[in-house]
Image (cartoon, rainbow, N blue to C red; front, side, top):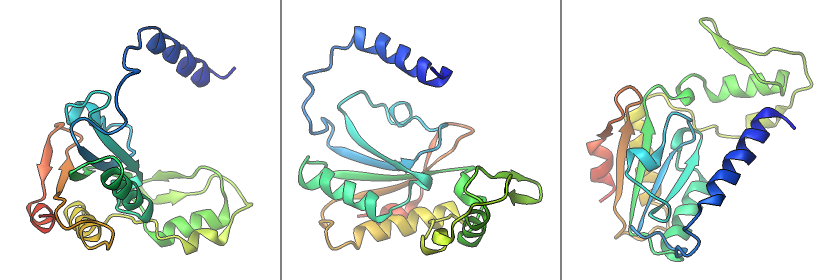
Length: 190
């Protein structure tokens, strides 16, 4: 068994041995949702003071308001009663390090893991690759505050999102652990 798999299964065994939250209701107790990045440095439970059952946390690369993220937010509201949403991007995000063209080029030459250095992104290997990457908008980020604003506006303008749901816009600072409001985004989200 590989070591990561073994570590995860052992940690789960320990967690399950003391598990006492089997009676939590399906709807989140604090009635809000967070859309944030999948970056391993972000722990929404810690930076937002959550425990199991408090809130929905939707994560993807960049914390972007993709169609699937909006689908999850709409389900969170319509079927599970959330009443407020947060869009939280973060400093030093990997989504700032490439463009759609760079990602498409990397995928077209190889499907193996790429590397980055001072000269940019590089593939480690020769093919096979795929040209399918050019058909995806990777939702890369040029400016954090601007991307938070864009995502809040995209959510608020979606025809399935009720106008009364406030959407707040923040940037998590990976150096300090602080949430920094993007005032323009929060204003657009009211």
